[in-house]
Length: 251
Image (cartoon, rainbow, N blue to C red):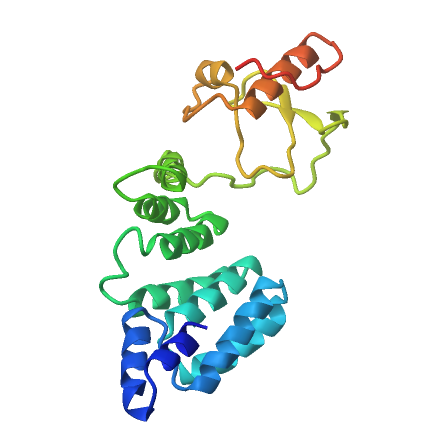
């Protein structure tokens, strides 16, 4: 659409260089109008969730436009969502390399840095992910950038340690304490007495009650969100063999 607008402003073949220059500066250079139309089609497929069709179109375009940041970023995003982290890293790194010098500064490069960080996060390479999340958050941690900065600080707590390493028997049976509304199991931290843990399939981290974390020599990062408050109330009820209370925020 942007290209059609430019073409309406710059009539004639002698002005095509102006259009190409505009797209090159912004990292979206297409070799011809057909490629531009195909990119619009790929973007429409992407927006409609037809990722396989979008990917097929983008793969055809990348051969004639190997330096297109937009195509590289879209292909990287699709690879990330398919959990093909190595391919996603390759696309995102090349996209950052091909970005113009002006657009490769924060906050214009924040989205690419965030997505590259996400690939390392999925691979449990938390040290690299922490650095990239921090870079994506930038020097002014406001709005959504603050969340990225906090994520970087959180992952940096692991230092050189390798979290989530699996040891022990090949098969372990764990009994559920309750199943509704969320499953609860008993686990221990640092060989302490077992405690109640809620399994939230929508969560990506292991979160501990602050007092429990301090008691058992676990690093603390942040506390207090309504869901944390609710879980704490619920777990306290289980400790006393009471019926888990309905969600009532105490913050």
